[in-house]
Image 1 (tube, rainbow, N blue to C red):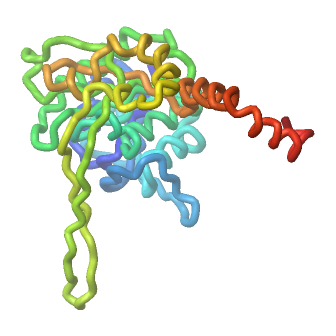
Image 2: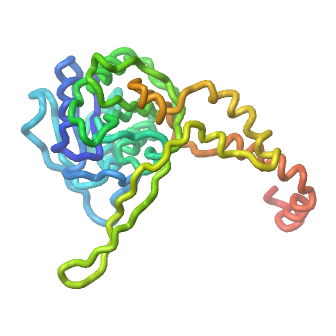
Image 3: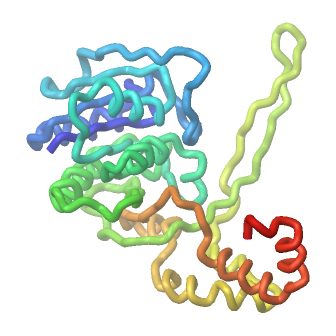
Length: 294
């Protein structure tokens, strides 16, 4: 299969080289297009006000891998690959293997997840992969799993608009307990801005947040007035039996969490419908103000 590989850790990251080389050694046609330096936590940012440059990288990868270093963000890299560098669309977009977990609310900031999501937006099946440690550097178990997952999925495309977010525990391959399908959990951070002064006497701030708490069930944060709790009942019934990614990874399971770019909240739609039903005066007022738009 033809596979596009990107990341947010940059062209020199061990994770992307391990992933790309493993896939190439398995017989896949692999093209790497990733940032020329680390671009972690850039989310889905795009470069709009300056040119994007890309240069061929001729060392560090399997001989059959064609690699490019791009001056843009992770999302830029995938856009550029699909729009200019590749002759035909790939069968898969893989992003990673990221050095550090992308669990829970991390996915909102993650350049790794955003690069994969760019593939999904373009209608291409995509997988984001992360090693759940900033200290460990053993990426081969994750690369082996990525190879097996791609081979298993084959040409059976994923559900349209769905990205697989995969996190690999930072343990020996023999100590991985298995694979679990998970739901997105919630990670809380306490943001600490350290105030510093540069050599010219000007003040600057350095963000150094850390995880202080992991919440097992984000759905439990909803509720309070009965109406909202009722609106959430159907949602809870559908996902509450699945473990949260933040907990399953602690038990040394590989986690696979399906994500989507459509952020519309089904429970929110239900809730708003209930609110409007109880506020006929508001509806009538809107109809009088904009009769042709309702």
